[in-house]
Amino acid sequence: MRFVKGHGTENDFVILPDLDAGLDLPASLVARLCDRRAGVGADGILRVVPAKLSPEAGEILDREGTPRGGAEWFMDYRNSDGGLAEMCGNGVRVFARYLVDSGLAEPGEFDIVTRAGVRRVSLGRTGDVSVDMGAPRVGGESRATVGGAEYTGLVVDMGNPHLACVTGDPVGLMDLGPQPGFDPAVFPAGVNVEMVNLVGERRIVMRVHERGSGETRSCGTGTVAAAVAAARFAGERDGAWIVEVPGGRLTVTLGEGTSFLAGPAVLVASGEVTGL
Ligand SMILES: N[C@@H](CCC[C@H](N)C(=O)O)C(=O)O
Image (cartoon, rainbow, N blue to C red):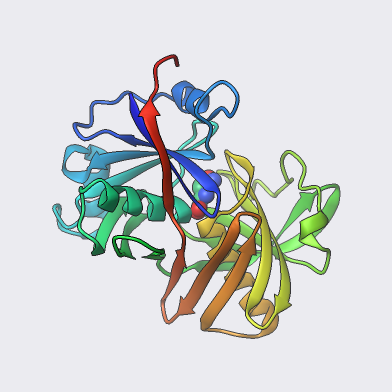
């Protein structure tokens, strides 16, 4: 099985090109591939599948009212525990970088099918990758227990579920623990929990505990959720936010009816899986 390794602000992925859609990828194999000691090691898997060969992608396009053929590639994203997720903001940027670097797509703008719907990416032959993340769907407040303390956060749906907690406690020093507590009535399918400090004008620091992957060094959908929560907290609306994460820096732009995420996305290695 050929693989490519890439990351976006150190949110890292094993990319599996599956151009004839023939790869059987049970959860147990995903978990072994993502294992940092016995496998390749990653926060998640990006299976690269032609949309026209994926019944799941066809259903998503129909659901969205996008003509079949309107987006050529389907990002089949899996968390490191083997579970499916609807969307991955860093993953879709790394996925786009893989398509361009491997000659499967031309630089510029193109659409990628994800379980959360079609997302438009924009990139050159080198440099940062940006993605139109769609409109954040903001709910009410909910609470999370992180490192033994309770925090209130904003419920934000980015296609996948988030609880973004803006706090005065320094998030850089926190012990996020193995799994934050959350309200299963609000998040029946689990949740990604962001801890956020407002550190300047439209500038935040964020750490994240991802559903299905544990604490990661960045989370693209999480940075948008965090920017939305920080904007509410600061009494702001649209505009560009700098989000500092342990793995680097991303820019989130909140706009009229949509949001954009921009930052680095790089491929670092390729090889063959032989023993899993
Ligand atoms: N790291 C991702 C989010 C991946 C999915 C998430 N763990 C979930 O289960 O919803 C990102 O960059 O958005």
